[in-house]
Length: 158
Image (cartoon, rainbow, N blue to C red):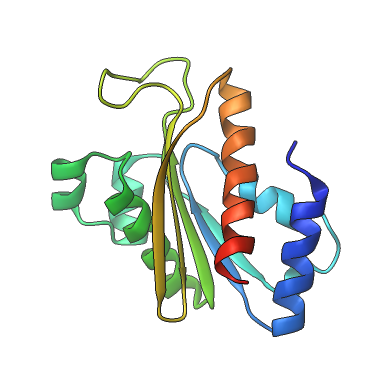
């Protein structure tokens, strides 16, 4: 489990600033949002989360462009950004994250091995995305992804 301190710092920052966050999660299956809502008071700033595990849910719920999925694949910075944009618009949040990746133990390729995860953070006039390569079991990849996403939220909202 990621450090509860990270979730607490996010809580304090967003509540103090009266800002909100929403998440579009794929490979983490809602684990990022689950960490945020573990602490009381999350309803003050967490708008919600969409678990868009399939490509069709990315397209139909989050308005990810099918052409982007076809050109870049589901695990790409472009898709992570479009997921974050889609959930930010749908849930009307100040900030949002988009997470897509390959947690394993299957599904990897030479170009995108197991543990490849793309994370995007979007805020007022701000967009950022990165590619990570995490190691370990499926659970370890998910845990590392949640921790890195929390770190990014704190870094980018400083």
